[in-house]
Image (cartoon, rainbow, N blue to C red; front, side, top):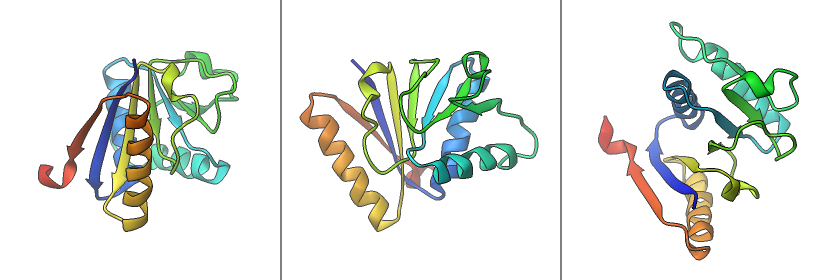
Length: 141
């Protein structure tokens, strides 16, 4: 069953997601980042290049020819996904294909709309029998 973790009260949702991608890469894990719209995928792609001056996080979009050899893959659907180890959702809705992954990570800012959509996702996963781990990042600095 998919292990689901929510990270709440992050200061900057996409920056936090970049740090999760960086940690996955540094620990040798593959990660699919679910960005359901092309605009969000492009924004996250750009941020991965610039969020950290001292590190490089190898990443491509799912349609790229090197996706199978690249640890971090940005996808807006489940077409041709090369990895099924971990999924990071940066969208507002549950990824329709999340249960194919060993792990799902959800990132939630302190923004009221973002928190509301996260509550709906949490209810959705719980209603399907998944256990949810939550981490309040506000208390972590």
